[in-house]
Length: 543
Ligand code: GLC
Image (cartoon, rainbow, N blue to C red; front, side):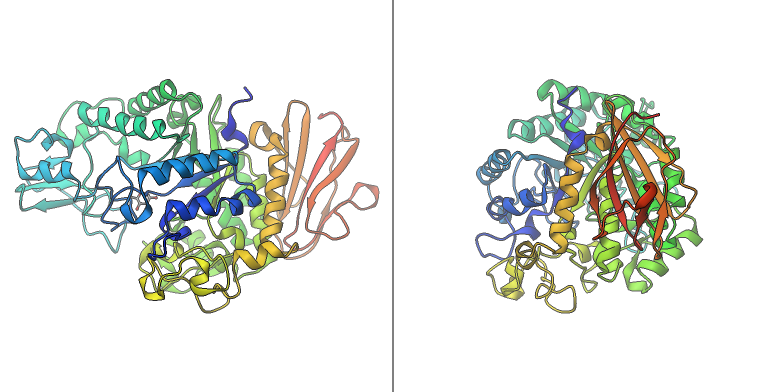
């Protein structure tokens, strides 16, 4: 089915308020984003994922929504949104948006009505208990910051449940009226032209509220089927991309071969990837790739290096996590929630372009659909002076000019400070300087994106992990419809070489390499520099 567009997509995540401020009020907006689509086009992006841009008190970066049917006024109007969608479409880019319906802001009128009156039709839209529940500290998501998962509300004279911060009361998704409203929200944004949703916090969303409210438990995954069915009736090409930090055993229930979630972020693989990078060996990643279930049918894994949250290493053993911390974030201030790092990719590698390019090449070579966090394509760093995960959400660095070209507003009026000092400051790291120079980091990444877009084998096909007898190398053979691409990545800091034992290969054509002399030496030997990579197109039958 050639129209499964997401299988060969390059997804780029943008926080609109930090991307480009067109009206000079200090906050990024939709007009600014539409103006900067040329940057995304140059990079080769085909799908933009927008972090929440809805009206919100913004106590959790907009993941605390107070109106699902509008735009945060500082970011623009619904008109600006539609203009942006059209501008993206003109450039062949689709747009997906965050669907955050596990919880609302406590400022949402539904919650205000729910807490104010036990007889309100909205009372049952949230999860209330008259008595203090047992173990109100169970299941905390943000340890060290969040105190409980149930909080007493004086107005309601009852306890409400909140998986996340206390200003984010959980919606009661066991309530059919709530489920109906979720579909209505989806229908609204689909009608405005989006091509699907990144679904926030899916394991919590489907957590059986019945257990909590003493009502019978329904199949928790049924809700995902319901959402998917609705989506495909409204817009056949639309997709659901699940944020679900789940084990590989649980994944088939989320995918149902693409009949529930079209894509699921591979959090397990992401952690093994960073463990491999920290240990300078491919072994952990190779093992997890081998164990990763095939999503089947229309399903697809989404792969990523960094995103707008912390690098969550919570599934590693303590010793493994300590190795990652030692390699990528030794300072306690870089660590967060006892499990992660609030750092960007480039600073984790101290700006080492060799290792950064290898990491990006790997991202694009892995089976699945790659998702890039804005700014990582130019090697931006973080601002640890900002609280929690805000550190990685600083304004896009466009130029060496005022506020890094992000906004004309006075510096102290910016939505978040732009990074203006140190080696990751906008004087050194910015899009304008890099797009001008053909040998810049940005162009290297854009070349990789282009290689990936011309290798549908990787997004569409199957993959074999090729054993070349060296744990420090990851060699993948991606095949689809009789075509094949081989990618090789060297996790070690020493040069390496290997042979492909496959006799079916008649010719290897280098597509991408970090080596100026090319990766193929005499007698078929393939050589990689320290932390090197290469992509080879194969002619000949796969045996
Ligand atoms: C998801 C988001 C995160 C947010 C949380 C609560 O994990 O990625 O940024 O804080 O949900 O909505």
